[in-house]
Image (spheres, rainbow over the protein chains, first blue to last red):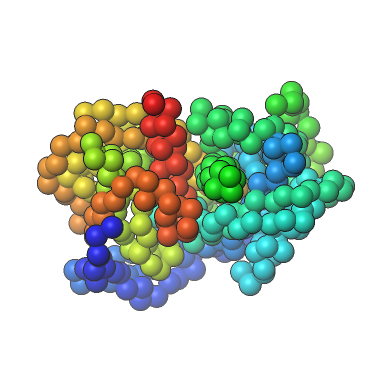
Length: 187
Length: 187
């Protein structure tokens, strides 16, 4: 990679005004100074962040969740995931909790795959991605307003579904493809 | 994959109230009926959508962009991308325009990799991902408030940077890993 000097592209954030205060998201309007000295306004959706998990059993099967997502008005096939309780929450603990709540699974072996920023053009949401192995099955305990169907399939099939568009959720594509690479790297 | 009956997880959207009207994003509050008959409120960030491109030259090098993202208050290394002019805009035309504007590149061969939903827990944003090949170099024409540094590296290095966390933008990880798989599939 070429060496890069970023001084010509840095914006300076002057202030941020809260323009919407929701339960799930907050929206801010920031005044920024552009690299050329001009002023501009940037809108930002503040989100607490989340953890998401690829639960992989010893037969090479992953457990996915089908969940209705009102934002896109349809059911989405995703890896198990859930919001942090707070920005400060330990992300691995959140992953353990969400995996248990959504699927009933507990895992003895955890591998951090990556932390992704979901869409930095307008939100600060960061999702920590994990591979969970050495699974034990307990009882799922979804939230009161959370309705899920669990689906099991080979990881290789889930990866193919990322390529065909049948899995289109970005965090799930990132995590499934990175999990496959992590497993390939062990061979 | 197991056959799945989703009737027990479908929510019904009753109405949506606009609570924030921005330039980049709009925020809606939806009243929904849950599968158990209870009512709930869902917040949604409406976004016009985008196209994003992996520009790959005949030497196996991709062109990436470094861009300051105010939402995360830092420079992010990403594939070239840009918003649609409208929901109805042809996504491939938008991809051609954004690639030309951000990098000056034009491509004769376009492969659709996938359409991803960036984070369906709270937004309807959909990004169409393309692999662009048979490139010709012209003059970049970034928007007035857009400041970019271009970076070239082998696709294999970009993929490694997705695994190490040096590339953490979700659309870029999805597109780079899917591009690599598409190229592997040709062999």
